[in-house]
Length: 86
Picture 1 (cartoon, rainbow, N blue to C red):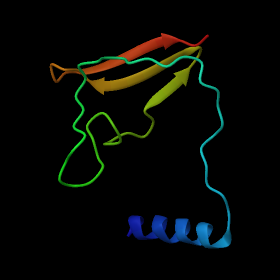
Picture 2: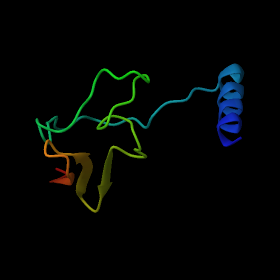
Picture 3: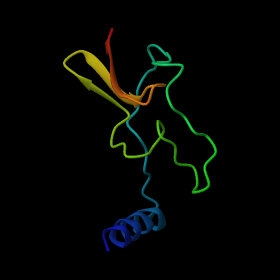
Picture 4: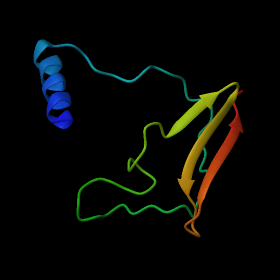
């Protein structure tokens, strides 16, 4: 039911011509948190990956001058990466 409601709202916005977009930002630094982190680019159920969009509300979160990212490491444990925002 919730999925249907969200779908209906998005459809109505798209039909009405209202633009949906992410907040604008400026890339300061691009890096790889863990080159051995789990990533399964080809799966049988679509474009859903472990360290991609599965179970994520926000992939990166900024709080009080720090950015945090959570992910699965190569050894299958959960990890949180932290870096100071310049």
